Length: 93
Image 1: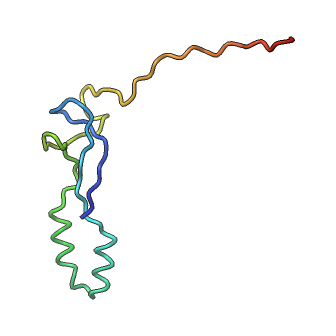
Image 2: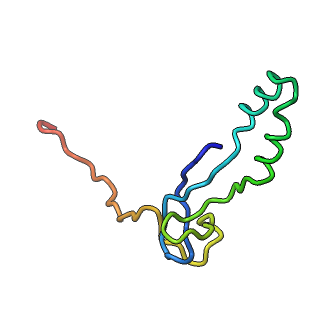
């Protein structure tokens, strides 16, 4: 299993969290199955069926969502308005 982390929105905590997911590394299990002439296939099947590819909040343990699916997520970055650049006069002109 491979543990991956991504920034996701937690509805319960009402904030972005670094969510955790345990995923099966299928390439490795495929190579092991080939190397053992298929004897590893039942193990791979059990791991693949038990794996949950959802991301969970590390604080509350509940499943997280993508930002687009949540009700009112906070923006990831807050932008401030920028003034348009003005022309600068070079000395001597």
